[in-house]
Amino acid sequence: MTVNRESNILQYFATVAACLSAFTSSAMIAWTSPTLQKLEKNNPVADDNPFGHAITADESSWISSLPILATVLGCFFFGYLAKRWGRRKSLLSCVIPFSISWIFVGLAKSITTLCIGRIIGGFAIGAPLSVIPMYTAEISDKSIRGTLSSFMQVFLNIGWIFSFSIGPYVSYDILWMSCATLPFLFFITFYLMPESPYYLASQGEHEKMIQVLIKFRGNIGNDLVKAEADEIKVSIDCVQAAARLETSIMDLFRIPSNFRALWYSCIMFTFQNFSGAIVVLNNAESIFTATGVSNTVSPAVSVIIIGVVQLVFCCITPLFVDNWGRKMLLILSGIGETLSLAALGLYFYLSENANNGDGDVSGISWLPITSMIFFFATFSIGWGPLPWTVMSEIFASDIKTKAFGIIITVNGLVAFLILKFFPTIVVYFGMHSVFWLFAIICFIGILFTIFVLPETKGKSLKEIQKQLGSHDV
Image (cartoon, rainbow, N blue to C red; front, top):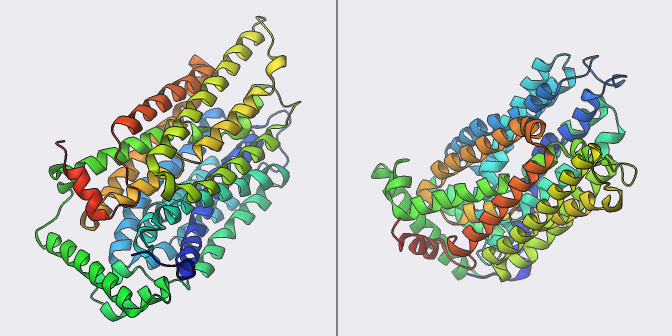
């Protein structure tokens, strides 16, 4: 069913309201970029350093990476709540751990207290990551499903810009207090939004489900609403019938369509992490400082520039994702990532040699910021938002929660390992080696997209499942 533009308004507004929790999440993650620069400062120690001494590189790596591990647990917890309490209530509940997290961060006088706060915040991030894709897919008409699914990445970018933009210019206390207001902004906005019609149908609340559908679909006629309600009811009946047959996590591995969907999703998120975006976003100011070109553009301004570029191009994705398809955007994104990461690695290689007295890189001082702008522009049209879009589209409802838990676990573990060992790899192999490794993996991601990944544009869940199940695993 395709609805007119006026009928889509509440779908857009509910998606934006839900995605404010993603805004809250990325502001917390990006908090490390300006803050760690201050906490690591020595001779003299930064005036607003709450510890009174500079922290070590190892302590910095724990502060930035621990939330990622906690996110894995949070995804399981909030995914379970989404099934028991509903998508809306489970998402609203994340305001509690977010608020507690910022209290710990604000009162921290030791690294241990700060890490506890970061862990609690990472746990809270599990709510938007696990619930938003589910909620968005279930409230949206399939004609705009890809567009709405892309919104989460847009709001993640807004959160990064929020921390990047104010962090370098305000004190430690002002930054954490500013970030602490965001969970309440989300709560107030999303509290007024309806529950997912799929969840209401699963609870036997048929009349309420129809009322919610009328709100979401607008003035399209009772017949169309009833037809969609019947379609949802049939889908839920199938899910519940499968549950009575003891659908288990092993069905992800026994049923070909589920297994292919699972490993496609896990591989996509692995490629997303190995693009290096998460490393740059958590260590942006440190990386730009390492380029040695701060006289051209300061690290703080460089970070803001790439944040704005990422936001602009991420906003472009919803305009094309339902016309061009997922695969085309992923291929274009992968090509841009590969070229820009290879160029950045080349700059660091030449820079490291120049520091040893072999050559001069002053003539290409423009290359780091240019490479990063190009990288985040292309990342934001494909490998940033689209793994979430594809993941939300390719799983049957009866196995979706279990699948999301596994995928988020893989995603979290890969991200944690990259963030934790990034400083060690830089020390032993050089910054250039890291970015060249990322470039190679991005190129492999292009080949995966071309030869393996199926297209999901404009297809119903039934059509996608049929396509996934039509091949031997």
